Image 1 (cartoon, rainbow, N blue to C red):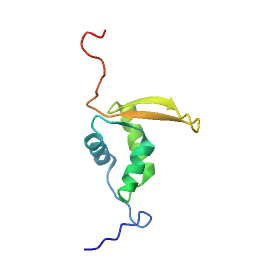
Image 2: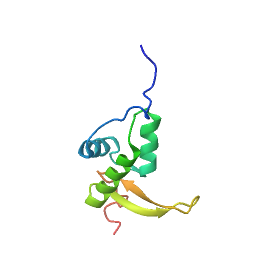
Image 3: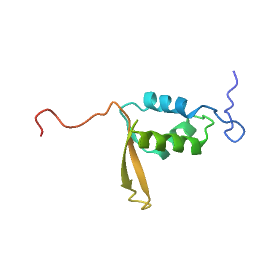
Length: 98
């Protein structure tokens, strides 16, 4: 069995934006994360991805309402980012907490 990893610089996982959207909705179900965390997780798993495409797909998903995005400011770098929340959403409000 070949244990070599795919070199992302030589190969790219060529999926349409809609296919990435469906993958993200399934894999990150009910999770909160940010685009950089998703990209890092995909790269760590050895998938040869185009990080620009991943960022674009996540931005379009947020802008189209497929996922929620709350803008935050990093305490370390001071840069703005979006904390992404994937459906189904887990709201912390219990019935009667109005």
